[in-house]
Image (cartoon, rainbow, N blue to C red; front, side):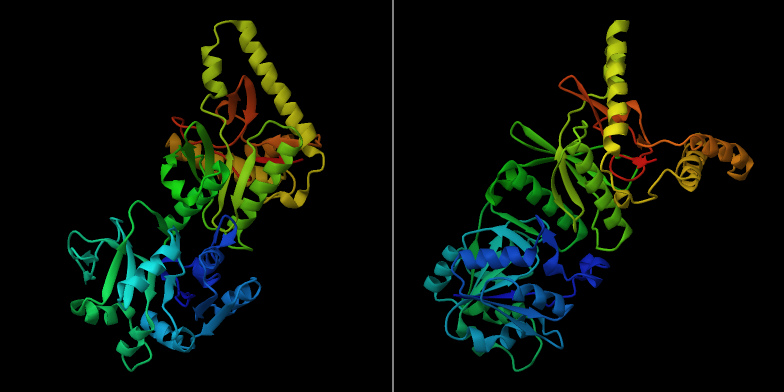
Length: 455
């Protein structure tokens, strides 16, 4: 059994990210999707895997060469479309039926069963279909043969998984570049193109930023929950309130277990988003290693910018303090929080590396003026209060504040956004975090993860 993975495309729906990294090398669970496909094909009996390449082909070829499988890459100087790519690989695919699979999909299906079904069908092509409202347009007759690839109603979606018989080459046009769907369309009336309809399967594509982010979230969460891909549909995802940054937060649940997923957006190496994500991870793991009560980072995919953390629930210090009826109880609560902040400042400074920070290595005057004072003026005074006040009018006061903040010096860490909504109470114990739980409004959190800077 052999397979051809179609990996030559430009990934235009994922621009500008695919200008630097080809779509097949986008990662899920920290492994390129191309590797997921190769391992899946190998596990189902594929003895050789062929990959056509064009866009950023050197990266794909270099990656394929390091894998311990029988892989052949075929470079196309001029992109050949799907049919042309299959025809170009004909010398390697003429002896037996073979798979053709898109390089931007992830799925859980029994490939060996699909292969056997095709061999027994006597058809030239078997296309795996499923029900997906976004892509449903392939119609199938009562006997299981494909009728149309452009149905206006009652259609199904092509998964990008197909098995072809070598005889299909006899029906290819005598030209370099062409679409395989065009060839299949000419064979429909001869009942040579069959549909294999899979019901309730796990399938996802990473063709857009939104679908890539969601797929990464689900793959990481399933791994953390210990779930197989066929159980991913049982995962529930709830969007949470924002934290004032571009990050998007979700609560991910399965049964009685829940996690928090932080989506930082696609983070290409050597970019500011990547540096911010790295700061998030390094500092978060460092603080946890020091015994400071912060959310534990459980899983990460750096390219997708997805981070999975433990869920500390919904009880904020602000809420719990408002529920306290007796003064001693309230004092005890705040004493615990003060002890937490002291421990954070002193223990967190031990073994801290300045290169983990993503703005400035220390709490500098420039940072105070730009990220604290100017932000306060523009976001709160001008934005929230709608007051007509300008930065120059208060520059002298802000300069004084910055100088006083740095006057005596301090060796330790400082939480730059310490407010009651950023302190959670979990199992009677306070924890520090930076994202807002459900029901709370946005806050002015600043990078990195737990918003502190060594001083």
